[in-house]
Amino acid sequence: MRWIQGVWVCGLLSAMLGCASEATRRTASASYDTERAVVELGDSRVSLYQYGGVPFKPYMKELRTPAGLNVLRDAPADHLHHHGLMFALEVDGVDFWGETAGCGVQQHASMSAVSHIGEDGLHGTFVEALHWLAPDGRVLLDERRTMDTCIGATAVVVTWRSELRRPAGMEPARIGGRHYFGLGARFVEAMDAGGRFFNAEGRPGEVFRGEERLVSSRWCAYRSRIGEHDVTVAMFDGPDNPRPATWFTMTEPFAYLSATMAYHEQEIMLPPGETLTVAYGVAVWDGTPSAAQIEAAYARWKASLAEVASQ
Image (cartoon, rainbow, N blue to C red; front, side, top):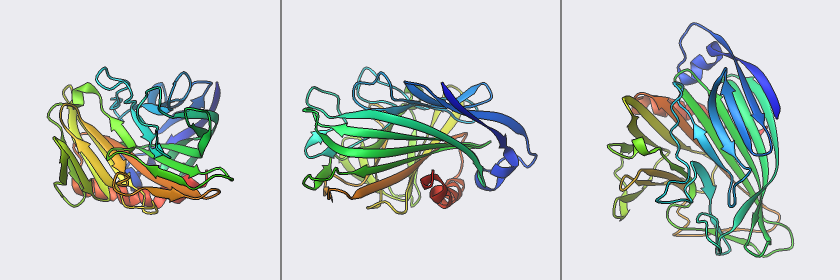
């Protein structure tokens, strides 16, 4: 296993994520092998990204709050193709979200890791190369995927950045999908009951189907409980994304949150040799941060995007 190690200085995080004022020092590491990439703080796992032994698509299998509570669920019986935090679209009519014989495959090609201490604390960053393959083996897209985990005392923030490129010599790619395609999060079973979605503008959203809603906002959050503990998850929209985020939310029969760009209403055309880049943040807290606290974290996350993009 390849590994990198750094020292987490809590004082550096105080400005961004609200650490305690007294600085503490703990070791953190980012490591990867042939199947997974892991960020740990001391002996505690913070995030786990799975790319080996997956037949259809790599995904983030675990994401934990500062107290160590994992919020992601992998392959539940009701939807086996739901894998924690995953990114999937439709390309030229090929579905990369579902997992059937006619679906596409996101094929892992390579992985690298870097670690650094920025103004907002320690970052464990993985950069993965993937090929999006049609069922007949054709490469429809190449992707450079960056996953950055920043550890804070009150929140853990993951930045997911996907740079999609159409291979040369092909017709423009038609990128679309259903109303929930994009970066999706399936939460652990304990979070399904009694949770509540809310967003920056306090909009109720448009009912699309049943309990499913679509809403535009710069961020969307879900508050629920794991056992006796309150937890909050928020997704942030990257300011330079090709379109503003349309958030897909549902609460019945399970909770789900996706960052979409309304692909079901209008496809995106990607010419060969050009790159489509999307970036989203996923922040997890113990407890119930206010909308103002989430807004502040979102603003500071936006300021850190350039540093993540340079990795």
